Image (cartoon, rainbow, N blue to C red; front, top):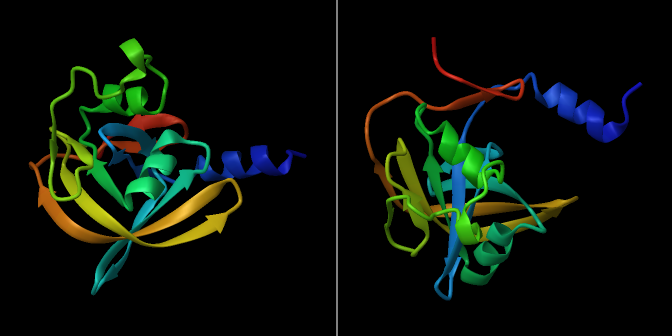
Length: 161
């Protein structure tokens, strides 16, 4: 019998999801992390939800600034996903080093080449175990390009067939 944490991880490997980078910026510091715990929750007003681990720098910056950004990754952005998941180290631990970025309204950075961007103002937070659920009202958005999404299933990147 698996313990509770290992059991949930094993079960969740059966859930296919898209891959996003959630970013935040405060006082000229910016950070981001790979997140698959993301969903749209309302069209009127436009709102999305992300789940961020409480100990992450992105969590801290989102709380301080009151904003977060979401870049939905394209299928050719596996290396960017790995970088922001901490699987590829970068000089000075700046995950944005060498990447082209842009901002929309809040100052949160978006990675150029993603399929779409959502710039969000935090309207609610909910404490949930090791994570915080952030509900953000979308204040700006852009579809950057056409293409296929990067998918994650059973601990591997996948593409649409």
